[in-house]
Length: 142
Image (cartoon, rainbow, N blue to C red):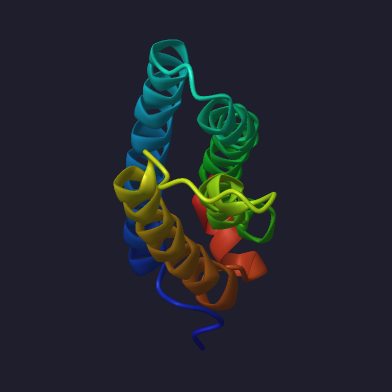
């Protein structure tokens, strides 16, 4: 009697989740470096304020991605769920607040990371739904 998705399938999907998380992390860390560089290059206080918000949001996002990766490794799929796309969207929106609109210098990068985050979220949702039974978790650790 099959109580959950095959252990092999779950392992493959778990590996895919780790790859997706790694790519999301790599892109996020690269964007953090770009934020610092742009902050140092501009004198526009409004852009600097937006970049400051982005730095804070990306710091949160990188922490969440790192934590999610550890949870996937440990097969704690429910705990691996996160909302990194929310941090990236907050970064993007920070350039249109306060009645003064500026084009975000990070739009292209933010869009890529949001796509990665949503894709990763779908993989983790699959793991939660299909691979989170006790038998699969036991097989994963034995």
